[in-house]
Every structure is written in structure tokens, then in C-alpha cells.
Length: 468
Image 1 (cartoon, rainbow, N blue to C red):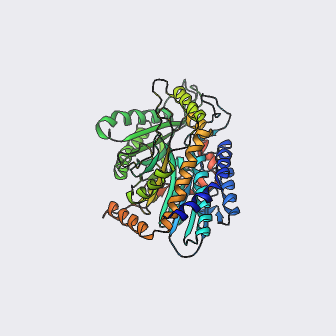
Image 2 (image 1 turned 45 degrees about the horizontal axis):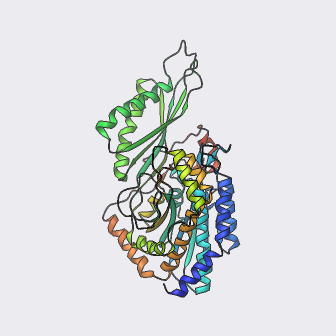
Image 3 (image 1 turned 90 degrees about the vertical axis):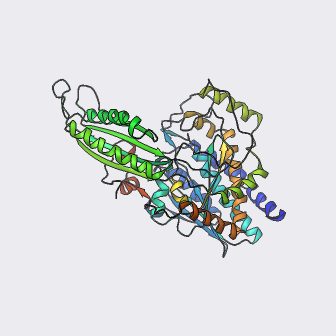
């Protein structure tokens, strides 16, 4: 990129900086559960429409998804991914202490920053393209329910990603820089055990809670011998009402994570018969309700190096002394036994495997993807009230701003470098090799798009299965 291109791009982004900051704050102030992100979707869609993007709301039949397109003639097609869902039970004030704010959810993974930063980058790219006379097409995908690893898979299945040459996105982490390393694949499903209610003093058979507890005990006993290489999480979402009523329904939500999608799927398929056996032994009913099955991120060093080259110039988030002090206090409140460690540099990260899953991982096996991460202190935990607090504070917003500017410069660079995109596609093909990929899968599409509240209150019913 020449000096004129860089200057015009940075100027376009600078003109949107205050809008990005306002959007970060606005989404944070109104956290919404996955598949119920009505205000966030409306705000981001309107922002894009105001800047001449053609916005299709409710794309793919998903009420809180959108697809926004702007084109300036022939050239590559770049996709920018926006996330904006929050996590249940993690509402908190933007203070360095546990201070619930009364919201049902909280941005404990910083998706308010992702949505604002990535959409702001797309708008800045659009303005820079006009100034520079640069051809190409921008596609912004508003993707709900990332925390369920659901939205992008559903949209990918239904064609929202079609025609995109490369994808760009961002996320929080404990490190600054471009990320080109895998994260964990994940299979997520809810097991529903059904029994018979009755007085707990007289009727003790056909207790759905017995089945769920037997399932958990059996799974944990077998873990060490059969699948100790996998990360298995579970929560009992429905487990009865009171001891004097035999439990007639128990719901066990499990996730199976592994770097290899095939191994995660294999472990899940070992667990599934355990649930059926637990129901048989307790004379209860059993049904399996798939939520999603997502591959982890496929690295792409070709795109990662381009992104990092711009982060080398931008530098880490522009934290003030007050921001650093806030993060230090927050880290100590969250992890008092740890020293405060904050990454103050940017670099390309290629080693290891991130211990979480992301549904853009599924897309990355078909379309090359680049991600920029911004750092939180090592002691601040994701999916924790502390990240909610930081996501609403200027210290968190600075991370989103760094990411947004990096994505803007990278997009302009790629639009003018079709050969780099071709190289990224070649790298993807080499990494996938000859393996045959099973199609993306997510469950309960009709329910999630028409009655998502039933998912969150634990009454949803779905006939979807992993094999479907």
C-alpha cells in the first residue's frame, strides 16, 4: 500500500471513530440473549443503511441476522462478520467489582465491541474505496447467537456466505495481534429426560433427575479412560421443582470440545448411548436435542501476515493511565492470586490452540479468514462479570478501536491485492487437503427463529438430531 492509500484509509476510519465508540457503548447498555438481539441488530443495520449499504434484515429467515452489501465495481468480495449477543447471568456495571446491573445478560465476551468495531471498519472501507476509486464488494454479515455456536452455521447453510473471497473479524483475548492458530471444535446438545411426577415420599421410580444424575456420574467415570483428551462441560438447566415432587423432566446441556472436529464428534457419539442407558435403567424417557456442531478455526497465515503488518504500524490499544489502572483493579478483583499481566505489544500468533470455540471456525474451512484480537489482562476471565465490566469501559473500547482500524487497513490492502487472496485460498485448500468435510450443522432452526425464549426458559422441544 502506498502512502496515499494508507492516509486516505486512516482518514476514513478516523471520521467514524466517535460513531464506533458510541455503538460499542449503546450495544453494551442493552445486552440481549442469543437469538433475541433485536436492538443490536436494528442499530447496526440502520448504521449501515445510513452509509449506503443495501441491507437485508432477517436474512435466511433469521430475525436478528442481516446481510449488508456495498459494491464499487469489479474486484474481490470481502466479508466482515459482526457479533452482538450477550451471555446469561453476567450483567455488571462498568466497575472493577462484582456489581450486577439488573440485566438478564451481559457482554461477558465483548461482542458489543466486535459488532461495532467490525461494522465500523466496513463503513470506513466503503468511504476509502470511493476516495481511492478502488473496486470490489463489501458484505457485512450480522450473525446472531455466536455464544450458541449457531448463527454463522445457520447462515452458511442457507447461502449468506456465498460469493465471499475472504473473511475478516475480531475478538478479545489476552493477547494483541493477528491470530492464525486453531481453536476448539465443539458439539453442543441438550438431553431431555422425562419421568412421572408424584409425591416424593411415596413415588421414587421414573424420576427424571435420577436419569440425569446417573448420566453425569457415568460420563465422569468414563472420562478418564475413554475420552480424557476432550473438554466436556455440562449444566442441569431443569432439575425438578422441590424434593417432595418426583422430577418429571430434567434437562442436561452438554458440550464436547476438542481441537479435532472428528474427535469431538466421536466423543459425543460415545456419550450419547450413556444417556440412553441412563434413561433405560431408570425407566424414564430420553430425547436428544442438537444445538450445533462447529469446527474450530482453520489458520491462514497468508491473511494473518497481512493483518499483522498493519497492526505493527497501529500498535496496541491506546490505553490511558486511567484505563490501565482500571484493568489492574479489575484483574485483582477477579483473580486476586495472580499478578497483573497486560500485553502491551502486537504480534502474529501462530502457536498453540485457543481453548474456546467460535462458529466462524466452521466458515474458515471454506473461506479464508483473518482475525485480530485485543488484549484484556490475564486475570480477567471471559464469560465472567469482569469482562462485562471491561466491555463497557473505555479500556475495552480501546481494544475494539485498535481492531477496527486494523481491519480497515487490511481490507483496503486485500481489495488491491487479488493475488494475496488467491494465495490465501490456496493455503486453505492445502490445509484442508483431501479430507471430505461433513456439512455444517445446527439444530432447532424453526424454534430458534420463531420462539427463542423457549430455549432460554428451558421448555424448547426439537426433533433435530446430530445425524440429520
